[in-house]
Image (cartoon, rainbow, N blue to C red; front, side, top):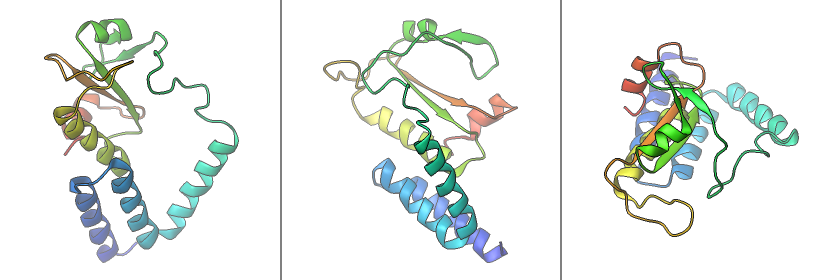
Length: 155
């Protein structure tokens, strides 16, 4: 990739991250920029998504509004915390991301942080306003430095 293409892709990332639009529109706009600047990479991602879909990836995952099964994950300091412990602090939004280096993940986390600050928390049943203590957890699946990732992800 040329330096000018890399610069243009970085600019597209910032534009999409800050776009006043739905998350879907932001992600699709960035995906189109990648398709324009790195078409072979976009084709490889499309192939991967197609194979995952054909093999039912995610088909057993809980749907919005369904309860999550119990689990334990490391927090931003590496300490193990359970779903039960996190829910004791208040309503919870959990999202899984590849890492702080992934532009799509960074756009998603940025949107989550902005939305959760201004929108009602949609729990099971009737949506209720965010309560003091509501929080979001972003789990980075491939990060080796969770503290640094947590600080930089939404930026």
